Image 1: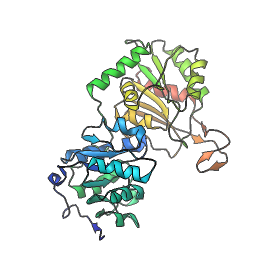
Image 2: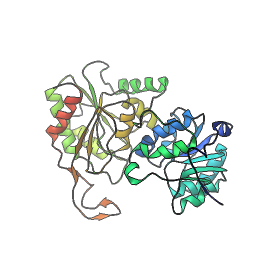
Image 3: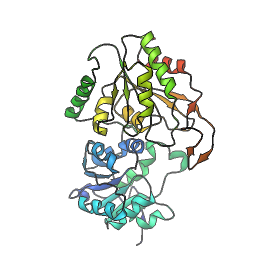
Image 4: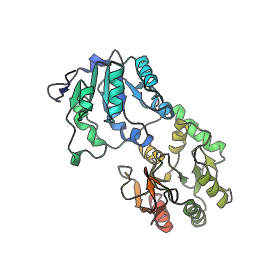
Length: 348
C-alpha cells in the first residue's frame, strides 16, 4: 500500500462517489467525544454523504438519532465481530475522525477502498489518503477536524460548538418521562443534577455537597423544580442524595435508554454535573450547564455555561484510578455553585 498525503485543493473526492453507500465514520468510543465530534459529522453529512457511525453498543441508539446517520455498526468485543459489523454496513469510504490506530486497522481489515484520516507514524500505512494533522496549537476542540474535512471536500461548519436536535417524537417522550416521575408540568425553572460520570477517572463533586445544594435551592427558591439523573451502573451516590433530601425529588434514568435520557435532558432548564458525557450532551441539546470540573477537564464550549474548577484529591494513582477514594473533587464551594445556578436561571 502506498498511502498518499491528501491536499484539500487537489485530492478532494466527489461526494457522489460515496453516494451509493454510506461513509464509515469513527468518532469515538465514549459519549463525550462522540458529542464533541458532532460538528464534523454534520459537515460530512452536508457534503452529500450518508454516515455509518462506528460506536460501542451503549451509544448505538443515540448515534441513530443524529441526522444523516443511516447505520451504527457496533464495536464488538472481538475484532472479527467489529469487522463483520462494518462489512454489513457496505461502506466503500471511511473517515477516521478519532485518529486512533484501532479504527484505521478495522477499516483496513474490512477492505474499505477509500480510507481518510490524519496520518501518523503507523496509522498512515493503514490509510489510502493520509492528511497532515494540524499543529498542536490548532488541534484543540472540534476545530481540529478542519483540515480533514477540507480534504474530504466537506463544508466547514459555521460553528464548532456541538449541537444536536432530537426528532419531535423523541422530544415528546422526554415530557412523558417527567410526567411519569410526577414532576410538576408548570412552575419555576427545572434543574437536573447528574452527580456521577461514565468516565472512570473523572473526579466527582461529593454527594453530600449535592444534597446540601438541593436543600439550599429549595429553601431559597421554593418554586424551582429539581430532579436527579442517575445511571444504572452507578446508583449509590444518587440514592444517598435522594435519601438525604427526604426523597422529595424524583430520580430519573436507571431504566431509560440513552436517547430517552437525552429527551429528558432536553426538557430541563439547567444541568449541574461533573465531567461526564451527560454534561456535554446537555450542552449540545442547548441546555445551560454548571460544570464542576478539575483543572484540565474539557468544558462544554459556547455561551450559557458556568465553569467551576476544583482539584482532584491526592492519593495513590494506578492506571488513572484513585485508590484512596473515588477521586473526589475538592475546592468548589457549594455557595458558589448555587450562585452559578441562580445566575444562569435569572434568579438573582
